[in-house]
Image 1 (cartoon, rainbow, N blue to C red):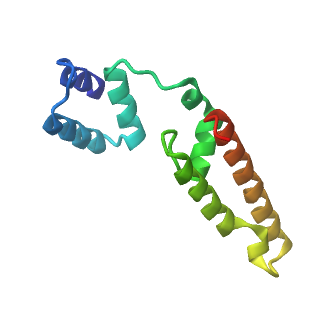
Image 2 (cartoon, rainbow, N blue to C red; image 1 turned 90 degrees about the vertical axis):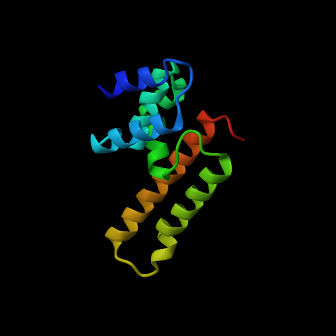
Length: 124
């Protein structure tokens, strides 16, 4: 139903702000996330996300870093560094082996996510 409403709202090649706000409220009431709402709008416009955004590994890396595919490089880098600083094993001092292993694994995953996003976005 929401998909049909989006198509109708964009039928005239533009969507008035009040219509967009109403569709957003309906989506929220139906439990749609912001990402799902963006996908509905994109589908109504006939837009398909780039192949990288459809890649589950890429989406997982973005989610781990807490950013979106359209985030600027500086934002992604800042998120990566903030998370790395928070989870790095060196920050734990005299922690037990289990916490150190967990922090090491989280750090490894953050490094891998950062490298994947840089590679897929073609950032150097």
